[in-house]
Length: 340
Figure 1 (cartoon, rainbow, N blue to C red):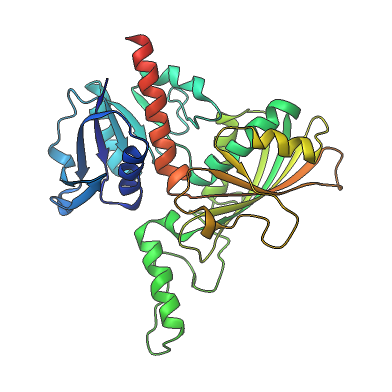
Figure 2 (cartoon, helix red, strand yellow):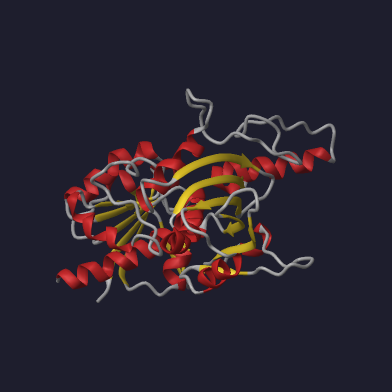
């Protein structure tokens, strides 16, 4: 059985990656529509060996379509996702718009696949924030063994998390460093991103945290366990693709680093590369294009009774966005077959 699938925002970085992953994972597509705004009408995108032209999202009729993968911002999603859902097309949304709605499941398939049962409440499923997705993949199997009490995470997030404009700004500023006459002041970011790091992602909130940091707190509670305490510092770094995270975990029960390493090696979606030698860990450059969430630098935290430190790296355009959405579609497909 195949599905009629629409990819909304097919010309953007995440939309194109969704098409790549649908093809790579041989998702059962009987018919595919690639949708974009009117200004991108007719733009060609690739799906496997096929080349498709984008259709106008504004005039598209979702009636009779099974699944719509949304990779557009919250403003457009607010207009078009309810239209699709109303006529029976299940929306898998990559924006932040629906993540905190109690009637809409927020899913990372390796962590809370059972939540897909609730999709029918509004015919919408939310995809989590990129920084949250990779972290909870690492947390869940450890939480099942020793119960996570508190997480302290510092992120090192690539510019592709800000879209094509972020990638272009890093590229242009890097070139301008070597050409003093070519000044490239920051536009997408608040300060120069080339050869710099910026401890500021999304808007500031009243308590001094940023919205990106708040998302990691709220989403971890919704996906894994509402009792987990999370504090985050999110930093933009001059890397094109791939988010890294330094994660400190405090558990209810003692968990030995060797046992944690074994648990993670056996867990879905995780690749452990953890050798205590030069280069015995994974960096963002090495994770690009891969499906896995990579874990390195697993070690005991001697400053607390039940603590571990680890290093977590993943391709943010894949596990942080497109791959997770396609994995949700795979879950959804099995759920639909079960109900049918």
